[in-house]
Length: 83
Image (cartoon, rainbow, N blue to C red; front, side, top):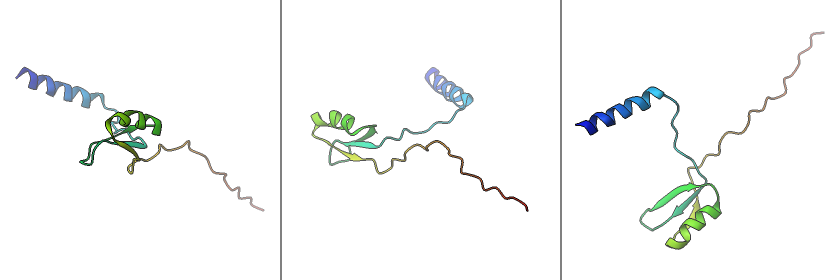
């Protein structure tokens, strides 16, 4: 019962703190087996290869990867002159 109350309290505290929660999005996936063992938590190909090399896996580009938005650029505004 105490554990249930603790979990409920933790959930309420997390919700109360607010903030935006997002899944991490990385460009490389290590594929560990033909049965779907996968880890898409690598920022570079080298990181992925170093992790999967001893396990007989391989690395692929993450098909779900979306790069973060770049800096906002303000387009040039056209000036309309009245004559």
